[in-house]
Length: 338
Ligand SMILES: Cc1cc2ncn([C@H]3O[C@H](COP(=O)(O)O)[C@@H](O)[C@H]3O)c2cc1C
Ligand SMILES: O=C(O)c1cccnc1
Image 1 (cartoon, rainbow, N blue to C red):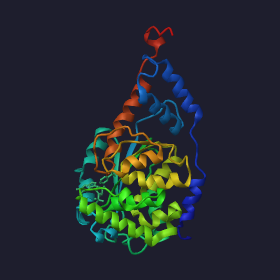
Image 2 (tube, rainbow, N blue to C red; image 1 turned 90 degrees about the horizontal axis):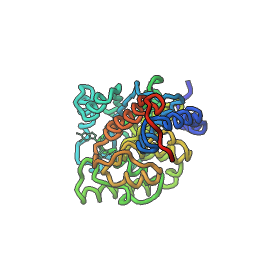
Image 3 (cartoon, rainbow, N blue to C red; image 1 turned 30 degrees about the vertical axis):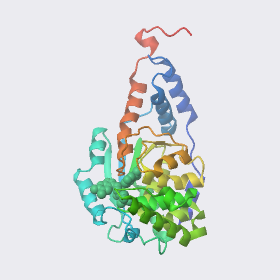
Image 4 (cartoon, rainbow, N blue to C red; image 1 turned 120 degrees about the vertical axis):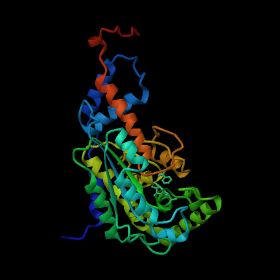
């Protein structure tokens, strides 16, 4: 079998299925019949139409939501960029498996299947301030792990991550994809002090200087400064597009991984909605660059898919109202005259 290469994914990004316009317009027509003033459910109406279009079916469904957490360790932790030690990644994977993390409760609350995928935790990626984080093949393997983790029967996907140090990786990736310095993209992550944030920004600047022009290609940027769990999220979001599964994006780390696709193809994230705006400061900027309006702004800054997991409830509400409400005709309610 030939080695996996980044070119496999480049071709998968060049051939993206588009929205099913018939399903979306059927949803819009149905919405207009429901017992409410037109537009009164605001963004919920748009979400139901969006879900129908990207699922390629009307009515849209919310019966098989799936939450996948990818976990990876980061060599860049050697630079002192996180408030927590690296062993927490492994310990939290055990916590996810036992159902004790925040995302477990949210997945259960909204009826989502949950899985966690640990990715070579005992072999962290390389310290990208010194050498590329991953070889091309390792990055392609991580993309493939994400690509394969998405279940064909899923109707709504949330991808999240666990990886001490990964807000440094996400910030470096955002800088590589959109420009700016370490200081523009570094934030507290798990709770760094202002001095700690300076150390983090310095590490990112050294990585940007070291890898230079190699970062110009988005997939190469992912390989040089990303991490396995970020690449897996990128691969899963791309797989969802090919499988007609709408995606709810999580916070800063998830959006940095998603942004790789957007930088390769402008419309690559049209099947994604932003679940929330994280309190990690780079996220607001990233959402603006991706032209995504967050559904929730609750000062959450946890990662692990939690903001998107909570937004599953919003999408569930949007689809429940769209699918379950009576029409004016059926309920015998008089329509507005103007
Ligand atoms: C107990 C615990 C649970 C978490 N769940 C998600 N994260 C989040 O924090 C990490 C990134 O922050 P940084 O770059 O500052 O290390 C990631 O693992 C992310 O998912 C957690 C962090 C901790 C400590
Ligand atoms: O927004 C995120 O993704 C985030 C913020 C802090 C820590 N980990 C993740």
